[in-house]
Length: 148
Image (tube, rainbow, N blue to C red; front, side, top):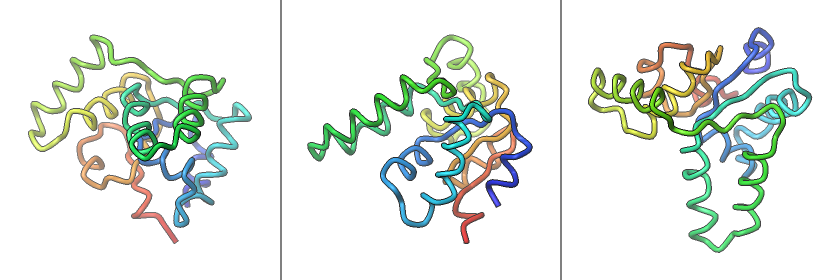
């Protein structure tokens, strides 16, 4: 169960899908993610994600005229005390390139998310993309694998 695994973590890296599932209240995942975000809000857990996550989560709301949801995302991802939105700098770009060089099927945004997680020493990378499990140097927790 996610809550038990997170109890042993100091920090977690979040893929864009996790943010989308939480903020848009995905019926299958919102309950397990609620406790994750509550722990982050209380400062019991530090969270990190690439700035690419902001780009990815804003596309759908903006495309569908949901400026309210886009603002919710932007505010939550840029103002939360225990959530760090990390820009793609030289180190992240270099590590992402190394990951893609080894795994040609790895998409650039995914490589950036994994590189961000690694370089910021996250204990766990939370995603819903099973393809990322084998590409990560850190433990990748795939939500669909662990859902009730």
